[in-house]
Image (tube, rainbow, N blue to C red):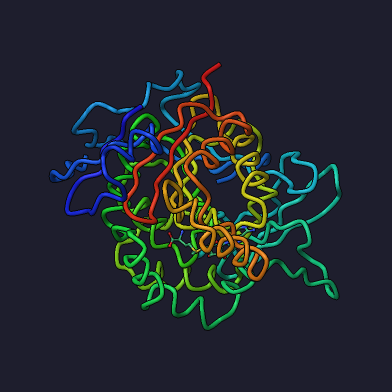
Length: 353
Ligand SMILES: C[S@@+](CC[C@H](N)C(=O)[O-])C[C@H]1O[C@@H](n2cnc3c(N)ncnc32)[C@H](O)[C@@H]1O
């Protein structure tokens, strides 16, 4: 499928190279038309009317929803994936998670919520054991980087070709048209810049802002608290590992992951998890850094990518073919992408049954 990136972007390659290296991507420069848990735990939210979709979706329409009038995200135990049940009355959206207890009746494990988020990592509750992840993950757990993330750090991504959150949001929305009104996981949300945009857009019935970093969760909470008239009841903050998502299989309409795939310890394990939780027809949209085409033949750059991986554990600079392969290998179809310099936004979907 050919995909357009437009606006004032600089094409990454010349057309002849594009034909050879980037079968799925076509570059053009024209303005972009942007287009309560019950006892078994599910965030139930009412659907609401939306005014979107100026253009027809480029993706094939997804399969019929089971219940178009409502949607739910069913939280599950990250150890056994059986449903979690909630004890107590507190709701599980922003500002209401303190003191929540979520019980896995199979593992007999209790997960708790604090002031800012629900802690749904497998190791939660451990007193002595604190798991250390690769640097690409650990860096974002630090209070300093979490604080700086939306206060300058993220803005630097424009040097790699990232168009900036608003434009990225518009591009993502275009891919997400088939699942508008559904629920969405903003995976590896950091301080929640996209989670807030998703929630405020009113296009989704519920947003789960998910990240592994406790400090990012705190920042996310604080940014939301600062906003006036923010629809808090539409957002749940969940600390979780992308490789062990705490959701029931086939329960999620959309997963968005901005600038995160290269930070994940194993992109294929993460995409496999995303594929597991997506319902048939569900959509995955992600951005990352890409490097391929003529550049991949430069020995220095090849070594550079390997060095980065060895030092930081980061999987930055995969090629378009590798990204497509990861999606296909994990059962996602209809891979398509938009590129600009080192920036790529990819999308694929779970086949409709
Ligand atoms: C560069 S930030 C991207 C944030 C945001 N989505 C954006 O578009 O700017 C990458 C995020 O991935 C998160 N991350 C890294 N490893 C993770 C893992 N194993 N599970 C969940 N999130 C992870 C980090 O905590 C960090 O917040």
